[in-house]
Amino acid sequence: MEDVKLLRNSTPLHDQVAAEIRQDIANGDVRPGQRLPPARDMAVVLGVHPNTVFRALRLLRDEGILEFRRGRGVTVVGKPEQGVVVAQARELLALARKYGFGRDELVSILQQLP
Image (cartoon, rainbow, N blue to C red):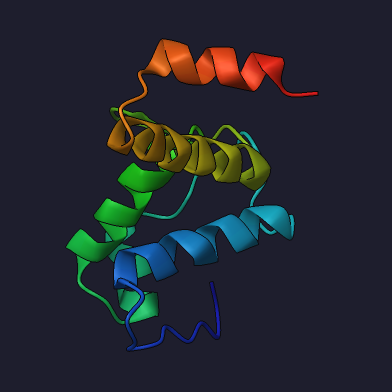
């Protein structure tokens, strides 16, 4: 996370922080089983509020990339590819719901794909 340049643009900062962490994992800078630095330390390095980092970490936890353990911190448990697939699946489910399809109907559609 050194030499990180977060952009002050339309992309929310927490998404940029999450992308930076994903990139570190994809590059092998952080490996599954390894703990991340404390969120407050990451916030200082990135020049953002700690809540921005916490939000990014929760997003990555929900994607299955990170695991939170009380007293042990945040550990990498998955790969960024897994997170991308989970994020895309959530978007697809949201789109399906927007058009009146339920989860089971979406699963049925997916199973019919070659």
